[in-house]
Length: 140
Image 1 (tube, rainbow, N blue to C red):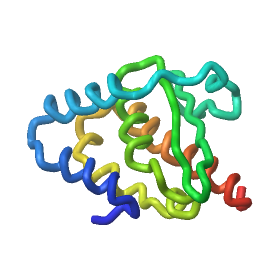
Image 2: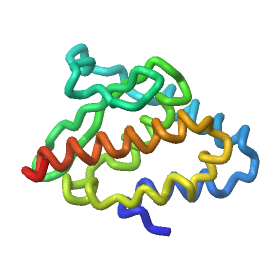
Image 3: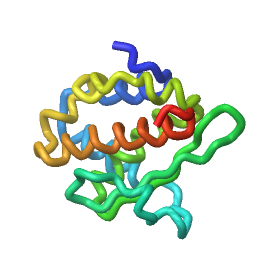
Image 4: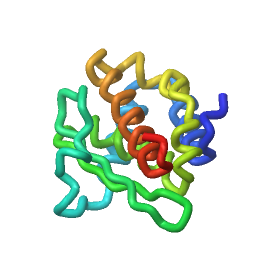
């Protein structure tokens, strides 16, 4: 399945390639550790993702026609899921971000090992990033 992002497709293929849920979790936690430190102004209400048990903040930075993302969460697994999305959506145009098919989430194999609230939070982070992209594209 093609998500609409080559980087996201690569991450999905990597996760799909492991049948061990523990290895998938380890990869997500590794992504969390690689996430750059957030800027101090990230924790504003406009950047807060609603519908997550954890505190999650994400913000697009416009660079020409493409978006780069920065974010943070107070929970390591959620931070890793956020990092996965940041890495997967980095360098896309707002229109490309809005077109990403959320079906990739089930393709990762993570949903089977995430709690329902975490799986829902993962989708909420994606939806929030898509809403931010839509606002930047003048469609939000």
